[in-house]
Image 1 (cartoon, helix red, strand yellow):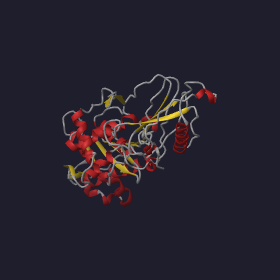
Image 2 (spheres, rainbow, N blue to C red):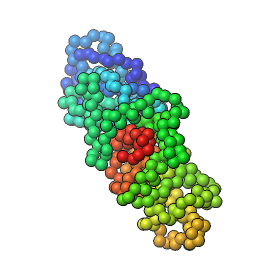
Image 3 (cartoon, one colour):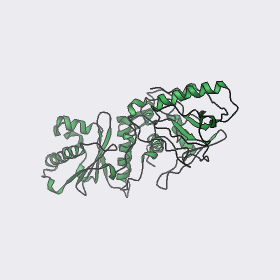
Image 4 (cartoon, rainbow, N blue to C red):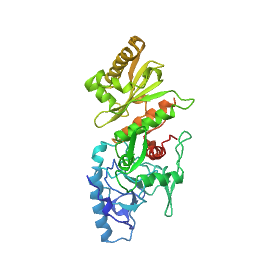
Length: 386
């Protein structure tokens, strides 16, 4: 469903809401908004004051219909008028907004919380609107603040997150901008990433196999440095072949590597419209499944991989694997970070691998995803993990 926000210009007026029986400063609550707008818009609901003409009343009625249609909620009270202010066409972290339909994003689980002094809450990724209500005291967004025409990014991302410099952000914006889709942006690990592949890192887009596999290659490359556990990562096609054709279809994939000599083995799994990650730890003798949507079926995947290890050990090492020493576990939603939209599963999958390969606790959340997307663009361009 396409929003009409893009067709409305700034609307300003002074109205008196006392005639409608409403108290000045009354706060309204707007539910989940879903829009397919190509520009970020910031919408303010301001109390009406005396002195306006019929034109503003007509605009108010039209905007009420828009809000009711988009939010599937009743139109806002007559005492509130929407003021739309276009903001620079950048994401929260500097990248262009996604131009992809929200229909594939599923239900966005974050709503706008408006109460008392709370104001300027940022709607979940994929919902390209920000709603703030008057007359509560204005507060700056935790991500964006506007001073004149300059957008100031407030990097409240914590000590564990490396901020991107202005030069790095310019590279990211250029990579996510216009250009030949088939242009090679990075090449390594016998893989090539095109501009079209990089564009899957735009906010709201699903990551493709090329980006997932390239990122896993970066994780493996970093593991060669001192102080990191040794890592092997299978391609995104590995599990699909294993599940459909059995061990014989994948036995040649490890002819140059002994997986039992690696500390950690990553298996990115493409479940048609969803990415997840299986992690084999040969030191702890565990097979774990990480799903950012907490879906069922992880135990079966783990058991399939444990069976693979049995056959791999018998085929390559001529040693029977004692499965009684191994444990399988599908991580519960409360145990790992979870996504709250329908588009960030690939980013969560990559960050699971990143953190686990550094033996760090999974401290990131959904709010970090726009930042991670930009960071991953830079890392792929430079073939180096920050």
